[in-house]
Image 1 (cartoon, rainbow, N blue to C red):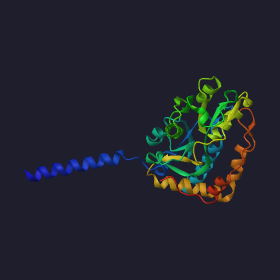
Image 2 (image 1 turned 180 degrees about the horizontal axis):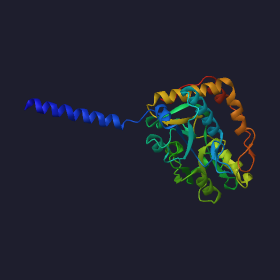
Image 3 (image 1 turned 45 degrees about the horizontal axis):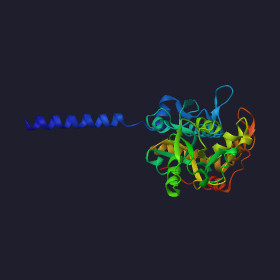
Image 4 (image 1 turned 30 degrees about the horizontal axis):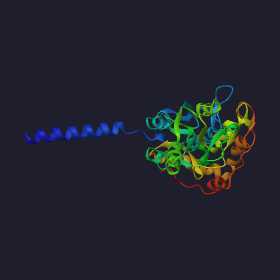
Length: 298
């Protein structure tokens, strides 16, 4: 009887162990080799990082960067036949889509923060920017203190929410905080007078203003709500092999100088649906990040 119970217990433990192993995610490099595809997350209106061109195809700075990363990873795997599958993601669902396997690499403009690294990992940094706010010039808002008592919009799922809440508390600004579904939605709220300011990464605000119908109507704050913060390509946590492959590819792109051509294409020349030039030279902080990449991702 005791022997039978022992056998039953052993069988149950083996079945349980097998179920756990079956539920463990397949490492991305292994899955790419098996399926012949890699799934890249993109955004539709995140100029100049990721947006749709007139043909409805994803383009942008991080899209180009991800395409080159995939090229180099395919060489590493000796699998030139691996295809790219683009999957649309939003600011609010990007982490979920990464962790459930819907996307393998997010190619947009996600800030690398300690809080996010609890759920995902990041590649080497590919951009650095500070948080600012945009207003209508007619509002007379020139500083953070001028926001006191005003309605301020942020986007759902952004790191800017925590930054704004901290400043609101520290400065007793008594802000009315609302959340937009997307950066375009939030920007429209300022345009329509539904919010006095939109708090977001400075480079994205500059792009929204430059691509608006009346850029002269807006003012981008000189005040910043954060220190310069890095963007990275997001990938699944604990996938060491894929993270190292992505970082090795980025290191090749950075050290070869190819990154300069990719950067200048999207920040120093005419782009987008209206041929706008953002005229944003590479900062010293970003040059240093390219010269000496640091693993901040996990």
